[in-house]
Length: 341
Image 1: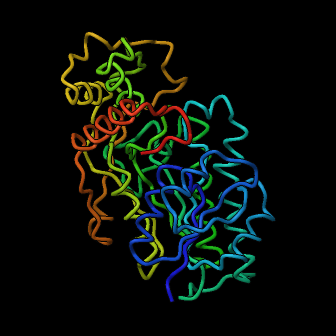
Image 2: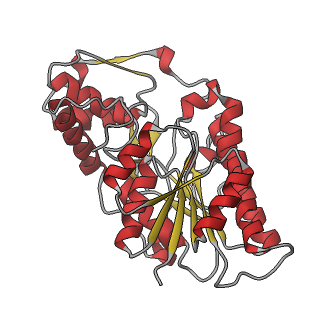
């Protein structure tokens, strides 16, 4: 029989790419969606017609138990979160509840449905759990590049909530013998990235200016550096983490950093424009506590999982700009949840 996977966060960038990848691998894929009307569900149904949906909410323990009991998954991928870092200061409590406590609720749902009441060695028949950890947990880094042993110093409520979920996943693995792993993913982008994220903000601005729909782009810290990769590559690593014999955590990234300024240059070069004519540095857009440098050391994933990114930074930015030019030319509104390339 086909393996069955349950994905939280199915309506997001990572959830959609992961669902496509798992379907290609022959999985029976289910996505968790909240009960109330959600405009993003329509785009999931349009793009992922073979995915089945089940209702559940990371804020509601009972609904997660019901979802796991109904789906009977072999693998659970917990990608659901409030993932826009600046918003985590504005909605810190909600971020803690969804991004942090949501991990606890999902782990508990798996534990209850699996009948785990005391410590036991991992078995091949138990549900395997993947937690989407984040490079934002490193925050004010103590060493560069960052690997699985680098200490955490998160600099946002989002990073703190992710660290809680990460340690909780480790705790359930060690306390109950559950097959629970965390993928510490560095920044990964795509044409499906939300318009509020800096990468998409830049590529959309370049496309709008090229088409005469805008005249400037305001950004915060142009010197912040990130390890940016392609989301379609990174979801493959998620699946690989659940196929190994023993559960372990892995850092996933490219091992190369680029500044926001380099991102801007690449995006405007893709539409043959001089970025300095349109980009304005705005101090009011800086974060309360900035994270200046994040760079992955993905050696463990390369050696143990055989995973390596395929899409380069330059290819990624060009892909996003091209997609945004096409969307805007067709009259689509990328700010709307229903618009998805």
